[in-house]
Amino acid sequence: TIAAGAWTNNLLAHFGRHIHLTVTQEQVAYYNTPHAADFMPDRFPIWIWLDEPCYYGFPVYGEAGPKVSQDVGGPVVTADTRSFEPDPTYQARLDAFVQQHLPTAFGPPILLKTCLYTMPPDRDFVLSPLPDHPNVSVAVGAAHAFKFSSFMGRVLSELAIDGGTGHDIGGFEVGRPILYEENPVLTFMT
Image (cartoon, rainbow, N blue to C red; front, top):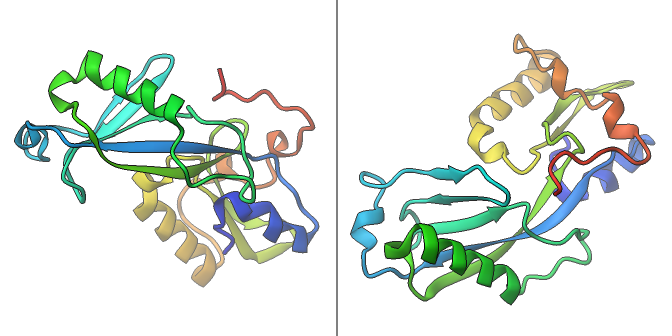
């Protein structure tokens, strides 16, 4: 199984393939709020602000404060050019959003992290065997696979062990045309 995120095309090159993927550097912030008890999992949900721009967040879990990020808010990078340094402009957008919409969550950041999104042009998963190499499966999470990790793991294990799956993964094929277009419309970039 090739499940390499931003490094996917490096591995696909071995099979003579290259798919269109956009890699962006994103950033998350965990806030040190004096109201942390209000943001515990039993009192505060995982949330998504579906607007332009889109934001999302999590209750206190793993760190001492709630987590907030902007969806597809960072610059286009490669695995080799990405930075591990937080971007102050990105952070200012997060701070402004939290101050306006979740004011009691706001406080000095406890932790800032960067990460990579790896997205096909349609932002759908890539989850299928590689044509001409049915013993090799390809998985690209399209920047939202963590919510579907148990499903993806099941499908990938079925593909590896059984050579197929009973789940309908037709829309996620590595051979779908948009992955090979020269200049595809990126439905996730505004």
